Length: 164
Image (cartoon, rainbow, N blue to C red; front, top):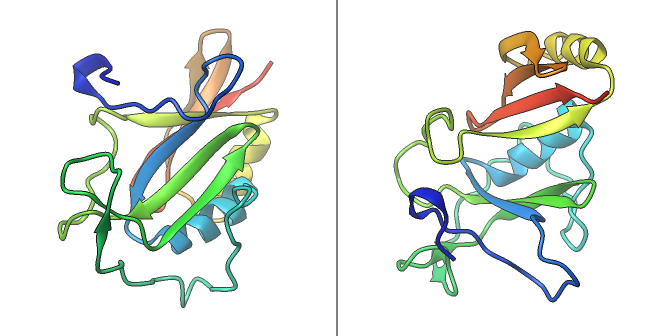
């Protein structure tokens, strides 16, 4: 289906009600992203996806040679390697960078950032700082709560919004 600014979005499954349930993302190294999200955001591996025994030193796996369809574009997609995590009932699925050019930061792009809720923003900000995660904004007021913006492993922006 076509969305704002001709964005493609997918409705998947045969659910009682249509709802937002997943995001496809490109990553330079999907398995490195998996390790990063598990380590820094405590994200569990997506159901049905294998975990990895790769390490931060061995997570760079070359992109597969063949494109496949159906795809999010006419050229087809490189689907290998792929990895993913879950946040409650929303899944993030990562595929290898589809081009030979490095990925651009997500800020200012159609998918500017994703947002996650946390219960203690100060605790999370401290944890992430101690782990060397780049905090690019905040903490700042966000409606009746607060938020920070962090940078993920492929320069994707991730908002952490304090749940009240």
